Amino acid sequence: MTGAPPAVDQVLEHAADQMAVDGGGLRYLGFTPDRYVKLQLTGACATCPRRMMTLDLAIETPLRAIGAARGVEIIPSATA
Image (cartoon, rainbow, N blue to C red; front, side, top):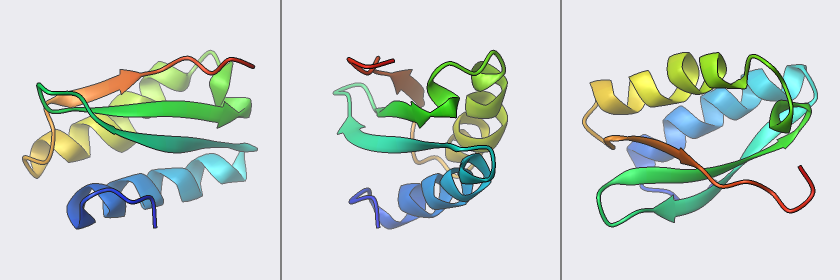
């Protein structure tokens, strides 16, 4: 659904579902050359003080566990 590889897509969709409960979300922007997933946080998640914890627990840790990425790079939104 995000356009990411299937394993990455599954992690991102699960995280996005959780984030949507709080009025937020994410946008997949691709990979960096050194295998970091590029994301933009949207809605309430863009300015949430706990966004780094969410990224670590809901996205980065699962992606590393399955070997799909080295980590996550957040790309600031022009409106955030």
